[in-house]
Image 1 (tube, rainbow, N blue to C red):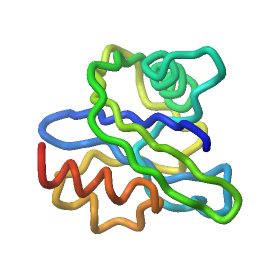
Image 2: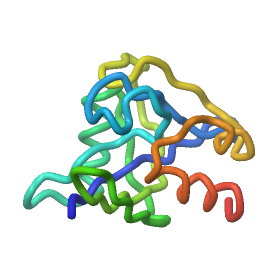
Image 3: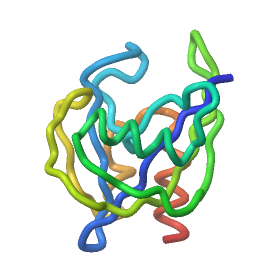
Length: 128
Protein backbone atom coordinates (compact mmCIF):
# COMPACT_ATOMS: atom_id res chain seq x y z
CA UNK A 1 0.00 0.00 0.00
CA UNK A 2 1.29 3.46 -0.94
CA UNK A 3 0.72 6.35 1.48
CA UNK A 4 -0.27 9.55 -0.30
CA UNK A 5 -1.09 12.88 1.32
CA UNK A 6 -3.42 15.58 0.02
CA UNK A 7 -3.80 19.23 1.01
CA UNK A 8 -7.08 20.89 1.86
CA UNK A 9 -6.38 24.58 1.29
CA UNK A 10 -9.25 27.00 1.98
CA UNK A 11 -9.53 30.55 0.66
CA UNK A 12 -12.62 32.75 0.96
CA UNK A 13 -14.74 29.74 2.02
CA UNK A 14 -13.70 27.82 -1.09
CA UNK A 15 -11.36 24.83 -1.46
CA UNK A 16 -8.43 24.23 -3.81
CA UNK A 17 -8.87 21.51 -6.39
CA UNK A 18 -6.54 20.82 -9.34
CA UNK A 19 -6.63 18.79 -12.58
CA UNK A 20 -3.86 16.22 -13.13
CA UNK A 21 -1.75 16.62 -16.25
CA UNK A 22 0.97 14.06 -15.43
CA UNK A 23 1.35 10.63 -13.90
CA UNK A 24 -0.81 7.53 -13.68
CA UNK A 25 -3.22 7.06 -16.62
CA UNK A 26 -5.96 6.15 -14.11
CA UNK A 27 -6.00 9.73 -12.80
CA UNK A 28 -4.71 11.74 -15.78
CA UNK A 29 -7.10 14.61 -16.53
CA UNK A 30 -9.11 14.05 -13.35
CA UNK A 31 -9.51 16.51 -10.48
CA UNK A 32 -7.92 16.01 -7.07
CA UNK A 33 -6.90 17.60 -3.83
CA UNK A 34 -3.21 18.17 -4.64
CA UNK A 35 -0.47 16.27 -2.88
CA UNK A 36 1.74 13.25 -3.40
CA UNK A 37 3.57 10.24 -2.04
CA UNK A 38 5.18 10.16 1.37
CA UNK A 39 8.88 9.30 1.11
CA UNK A 40 10.53 6.77 3.39
CA UNK A 41 11.38 8.26 6.81
CA UNK A 42 9.39 11.44 6.00
CA UNK A 43 6.48 12.65 8.13
CA UNK A 44 3.12 13.02 6.42
CA UNK A 45 3.04 16.70 7.37
CA UNK A 46 6.46 17.32 5.80
CA UNK A 47 5.43 15.35 2.69
CA UNK A 48 2.36 17.50 2.01
CA UNK A 49 4.32 20.71 2.54
CA UNK A 50 7.08 19.45 0.18
CA UNK A 51 4.64 18.26 -2.48
CA UNK A 52 2.75 21.57 -2.63
CA UNK A 53 6.07 23.41 -2.89
CA UNK A 54 7.13 21.11 -5.79
CA UNK A 55 3.78 21.15 -7.61
CA UNK A 56 2.76 24.80 -7.15
CA UNK A 57 5.82 26.68 -5.75
CA UNK A 58 3.71 27.63 -2.72
CA UNK A 59 4.49 27.38 0.97
CA UNK A 60 1.84 25.86 3.22
CA UNK A 61 1.69 24.54 6.77
CA UNK A 62 0.00 21.20 7.51
CA UNK A 63 -2.34 21.85 10.44
CA UNK A 64 -4.52 18.79 11.06
CA UNK A 65 -5.26 15.31 9.68
CA UNK A 66 -8.91 15.09 8.61
CA UNK A 67 -9.73 11.76 6.92
CA UNK A 68 -8.26 9.03 4.75
CA UNK A 69 -9.50 7.01 1.80
CA UNK A 70 -8.13 3.62 0.75
CA UNK A 71 -8.53 3.10 -2.98
CA UNK A 72 -7.58 0.17 -5.17
CA UNK A 73 -6.38 1.09 -8.65
CA UNK A 74 -5.51 -1.53 -11.30
CA UNK A 75 -1.78 -1.47 -10.46
CA UNK A 76 -1.66 -0.30 -6.82
CA UNK A 77 -3.52 0.42 -3.60
CA UNK A 78 -3.20 3.88 -2.10
CA UNK A 79 -4.06 5.24 1.32
CA UNK A 80 -4.90 8.89 0.62
CA UNK A 81 -4.73 11.10 3.72
CA UNK A 82 -6.26 14.57 3.70
CA UNK A 83 -4.66 17.31 5.78
CA UNK A 84 -6.12 20.70 6.52
CA UNK A 85 -3.39 23.15 5.48
CA UNK A 86 -2.77 26.85 5.86
CA UNK A 87 -1.51 28.93 2.93
CA UNK A 88 1.69 30.81 3.87
CA UNK A 89 3.13 32.35 0.68
CA UNK A 90 3.85 31.95 -3.02
CA UNK A 91 2.02 32.19 -6.31
CA UNK A 92 0.56 29.32 -8.33
CA UNK A 93 2.96 27.85 -10.86
CA UNK A 94 1.53 24.60 -12.23
CA UNK A 95 3.90 21.65 -12.74
CA UNK A 96 1.77 18.47 -12.41
CA UNK A 97 -1.63 20.04 -13.11
CA UNK A 98 -3.18 21.77 -16.11
CA UNK A 99 -5.50 23.99 -14.09
CA UNK A 100 -6.80 24.73 -10.61
CA UNK A 101 -9.92 26.23 -9.06
CA UNK A 102 -11.20 27.29 -5.67
CA UNK A 103 -14.71 25.84 -5.36
CA UNK A 104 -17.55 25.76 -2.86
CA UNK A 105 -17.71 22.41 -1.10
CA UNK A 106 -21.01 21.59 -2.86
CA UNK A 107 -19.44 22.01 -6.32
CA UNK A 108 -16.40 19.77 -5.83
CA UNK A 109 -18.42 16.56 -6.25
CA UNK A 110 -19.67 17.80 -9.64
CA UNK A 111 -16.16 17.40 -11.08
CA UNK A 112 -14.62 14.26 -12.57
CA UNK A 113 -12.61 13.43 -9.44
CA UNK A 114 -9.90 10.84 -8.99
CA UNK A 115 -11.57 7.79 -7.36
CA UNK A 116 -9.59 8.15 -4.11
CA UNK A 117 -10.65 11.81 -3.78
CA UNK A 118 -14.41 11.17 -3.94
CA UNK A 119 -14.77 10.08 -0.27
CA UNK A 120 -12.68 13.12 0.76
CA UNK A 121 -14.97 15.47 -1.16
CA UNK A 122 -18.03 13.86 0.45
CA UNK A 123 -16.47 14.31 3.90
CA UNK A 124 -15.81 17.99 3.21
CA UNK A 125 -19.37 18.55 1.95
CA UNK A 126 -20.93 16.87 5.00
CA UNK A 127 -18.57 17.98 7.79
CA UNK A 128 -16.88 21.29 7.00
